Length: 86
Image (cartoon, rainbow, N blue to C red; front, side, top):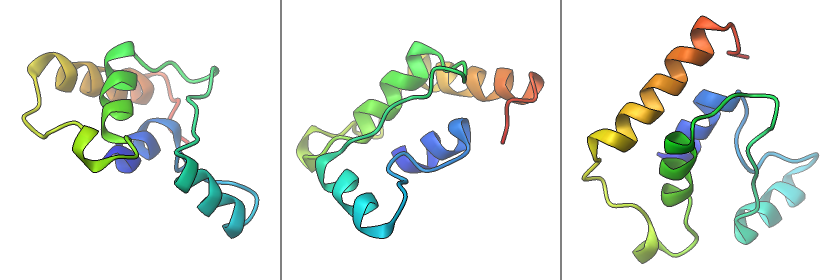
């Protein structure tokens, strides 16, 4: 779910790299970043970061709080309205 949320907001997967081997290395290292040029709310960043934990036992459990879910949805709404969807 974290990869899908990230891709929805940013327009590309979080671990995407120049080649497959580098992409796999980024996945294993859990190395990703939010682009500065795309406005993403802190709530959306927090929700995605919690879902993209390396250790499964540390991942966000899907008892979504309204605050986190509303932050993500409002970020998607702003991105669409500002034509920031790629």
